[in-house]
Image (cartoon, rainbow, N blue to C red):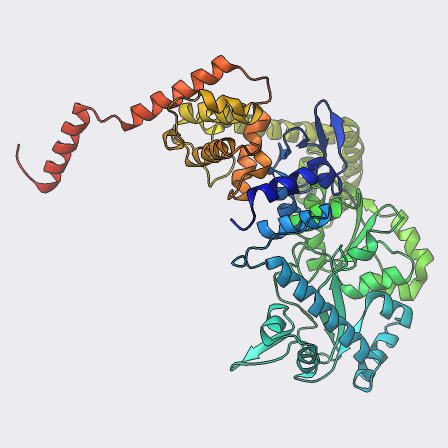
Length: 579
């Protein structure tokens, strides 16, 4: 173990879980616990619970959970050791280092510093002789010096080793340059990954430079070259310009496809624009956006690829609890071109007139069909009815059903009948799915994580109660008699029980938040057990559960005479022997 148990105890004690989680989630008290929208998956109603008295969090929706260290690991993507270091730093504690423990966090800090130096190098080259072409291009695209400075935009010279030599002179190694994604390698030699490109630093919400996007100066491909995935850069979990947009007072965020669109919007006063990093919108992006806004305006290109991306993005954003509006432009292919042609005032009018996602989707469905053809009109009405039937509010269904009817030139009454039929089909499907779940109660008792299985449900249920009660009243460990961890049917629950016993014997605190060696899904499973068993301690029920585990263990390990005879017969049959 890299850290002494007493140090971990101190880190946990100095970082109340409600304070740490409260930096990321708006928590409201409900009884003994606090609730908020889960930061790990999209939701509209709060199912994320924090129990200050137990030092744990648990989401009833995605089933993630654990202690304050697990939360820091999950929310920041840190290893166990680095999460402990971050929390120790927050509490002003000095970290006792184990010489054998290599810190990933220190490596990350080194790569953040290297990336920042690279950004400074690129920015300086924009104003040097080698950057004349890049500066000319930036000015041609309407970017003044203030914008170039605000975004840290730079230029990668048309050189094979300009950046390599500059960073080596600052003490960085070949391996660090490779780890930061700044170089490529061929025949054992490294060379600059970015050459003759306008450079856009990618900065995370904490202000760290984590990667780059480089745009070509000519018609060569790829048009944009992004940093590869590294230990500091994950394109699925970061958005360009979010470090700036999160401070916007406009009350919403604008999501666009390209760096230049985001930069142009900021330049024209729409300081809430962000862009994805060379990938389609992901669920991680949606959850990230939900931490900073309740409304997103989607502005993707009007071509087929852009419209497909819009259709994919809408359900992900809505699943994250975000209200979605879609802006469609005419006479311009993207926001950058529109702003240069028509200015900020007209763009503001477009924003105000942006359609909500239902209007957009109805329009997209209508564009698929020739509504003058009766057969295609029927197909439109059926597809539109499926969409309208999915809306939760009767008022919404009436309004949008009426609009679909108007589009197809049928009566609202006829459309209502079609919507009602679609709703009945949906309800029938949902009821069937629910019935299938109800028919397998044993399956419902299995852990949510696929990596944890209960082979003996009866014993495992008793084991859960034992653990939950011991966390509430550690002195119960004096009443377990001969029960050992080896007698638990679930190895994970046995390991947790053994750790509780060891800490209790050493006089250390018995708490879920200081357990060592548990994977994130294992810790989440334990948090779920504690949340399901919140009542007062019942010593008789505890004793019954101990007896159940002991009896189940004996039953599993008792080999009867009949079992032995059956085994003998099976072996003889296999060998082709006669009785």
